[in-house]
Amino acid sequence: MNSDDETYILLLLSDSNLPTGAFVASSGLESYMKHGFGSNDPTAFIRDSMASYARSALPFVSDAYRLVSLYREMDVQGSSLDQSSSKLLSDIVALEELYETMMLNHVARRASKSQGVALLTLYTKALSPPSSFPLESDAKGVHEQMSTFFTQFKTMVRREDAHGHLPTCWGALTAALGLTLERSCYLHLFLHARSLLSASVRLNDIGPYNAQQILLHAVRPLVAAETSRCRSLTTGSIPHLIDDGAFDETIHGPANTWPLGEILTARHDLQHSRIFNS
Image 1: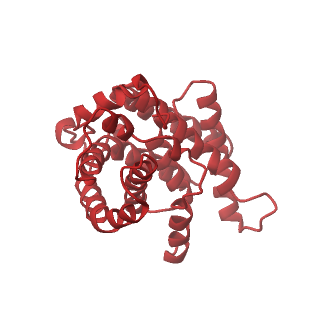
Image 2 (image 1 turned 90 degrees about the vertical axis):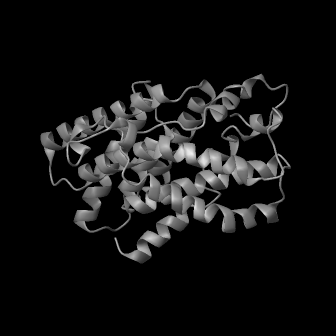
């Protein structure tokens, strides 16, 4: 993929009108404010949330991305393709089981699943080319391969054989579209920060102009720093994705670094009135 194509896909995925369900989630911000933890520094929550989310979610984005990329590059047909697809789905399910156990509250799980399945639907209904669209034979084969995978994945989620969590679905989606892993992780963190600021505006905590100011001047270095810090992380649950065979879960694995945020998010449904679903 050339740089112009990648830039266009980045613009497409960062479109606020993309139907991914992010607007119904505050990622714990609403509960954080209702419990009196708001402050004069509107970036405090963003810093803590991004640091924890990056360390807990990016390893899953990375592993799902690498799995789908390997599958996307395979030149196999017939039964071999079916076997490869089954192995890919099995590995994705293993990733999702680990992420499910790492999420410590039902509110975060609910939001993650809602947004994840929206990404699967997005690929099958919007981002995969129509059958009448002219494509070269190689490109057509890749898109058919990816469409089949996403259809199978979504069917498994509907049957509750898979969870459809946001990080794994995002990694799979961006790999299918041909983005680089670095761009995928960077954009994922940017969109997380943007959704927090959007929620803050809707909660009347900050104004829209201040939100854009924060997004440009405060969030930009945070996204870059967290993406760089978590670049080499992996879940450790897929052995053939561990490059040198050495994996220390304390150093290289996912972790939740903000217990307070987990506690407040878990109390979201206890609020007397609320704007967001999570």
